[in-house]
Length: 250
Image (spheres, rainbow, N blue to C red):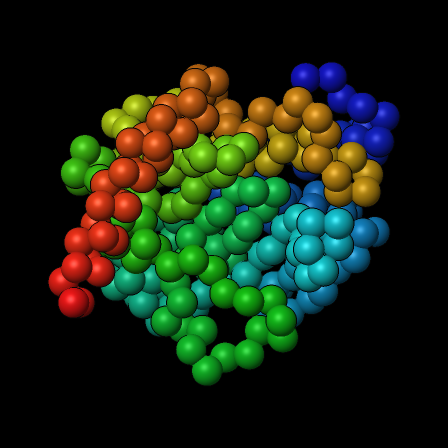
């Protein structure tokens, strides 16, 4: 994709902080730096323990931001996160949660724990999507037992990729409805170091998404059509189920 002149400001910052990562902790600290430097000029808000919103985009919604970073978890919070996930948290994701309890970065959703946030004010920052969602509520049978669901990436309209941290340490992007992997990264640190700058490059200086942006990375060109077809197949069953429900009430 061609980088427009409005996006060049953000793109020029990338080599300073997104060199090949040596650790997840280093990558997370670099991520904070680049996001604040790139998007604070659009508007930002700060919360407790390093939490922030940056990149205010009122053309999307009055209170929308390009990036949301939640405060990190202490040892008790990490234990709560493991309980919500219902499975072991590998060390790379434990390190991420200690730094930030999930995030939404340019359309990448990283899940966290909501238990530790009960009764805790985050001054308008909000709270993450729980790890329970990908690991307990909606976890396809074909996902390997040793993989941890960590988040998602949205496609244009119908499609979505679900992110899993495999027992090998790799991050895999699965189609939300199919046993199909569209992209794979060697580690969580490499996933962040590669995917975040890719997404930064298709936003202009005002936070507008550039035309032609490929929202889902990797071999995912047909995912939108596959997801649309699956949704259309589900709609008749959904209508039939609603009609049956109405008949039962009579």
